[in-house]
Length: 451
Image (cartoon, rainbow, N blue to C red; front, side, top):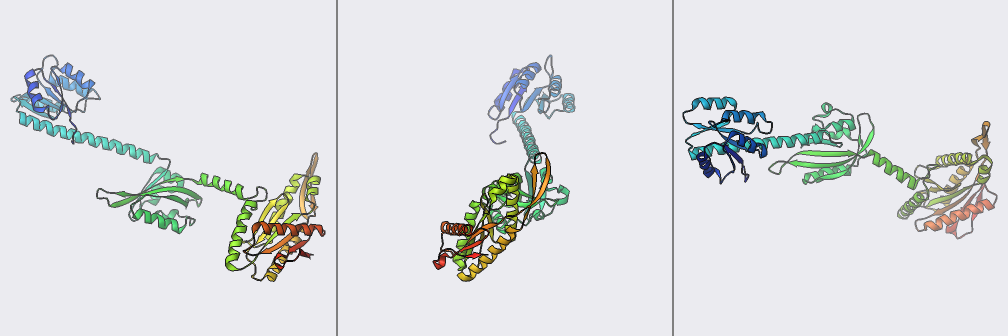
């Protein structure tokens, strides 16, 4: 019972009995006294005790009737009652037990025996209430877990599932019956890094809580993201016996983050990398070239007479052409190369690793540039819409002026872009629909025109 002092209500119409009980119990219990059944009921209602000592023989409302009234009230019916009766009153003792009395104390009261009986019953009552309290806590905890909007799973030390809450089924599509005893690896998508799992088990092995993100797969094959908190469960000896994981699906958040990232790094019309991502790719290419000694190339493209297309057919047709240009550019280069929309009708193509020899790299870059130039001159089928008239399919001719520069890991991005831009303007000045190479590493003026 620890330091808790049980509350005892003694109901007896004989003051001497109350004085005797008070002297015997006052050091160990919180006491209340009543000299009639009616006043005892009133005290019990106002401040329900843990235990009631109830005299059988009392005027007006005797002990049995008082007991019946106590039992009829929901807040008082479970309070244990010890009847106090004369030693030879066996009939009263039987009647009280039949009513549901917890015990009996006989008169004249033998203090040591009475104290022990009261102690035993108070101890049992304390334990009963503690069991009820813990059961209520367990019920609340169970309801919280069962109704939790997060996924809750418990595994043993072999990582075999022993419990999943209903939200697990909602998220994964697997029923509890399907997964009991299985290792949660059946949820793996293959997209979570091995390093994540190594860190997870290393953290749990140290008895600590692991927090992180995982990409898993539902029963229907759909990929989803989860933010997980996984903790070891320890017994009274501080030994790990189970693991509990609380997981929150964050697929919507990840999707939103990806959309924001896409908007930040990709062109909204063509879906090509924008200038910001191009700068990052150039930095990576320069670092790679410096490590390997290889060269790379940058092409600056500007569509010829694009403004006339917009003015004649409208911006919708211009956008359609830009989308097709982006597609053709991407088809002309390797997967590891970069095609970016720089601005308006200007595009940039960056070829990654070329040769280590400058002349050979120039030849490789010019070959790709000529392939691009030829691809872009192929007529574009455009659907033109006019007010009051049916849509018209036209085949629009377009070309591009292309400036090319080959660079190494020591060149600066601003210089590379300036050289390619200068070469592009040289191509325009020379008649458009041309490729112009800027040979800065040979300290020559812009030259080499194609075709």
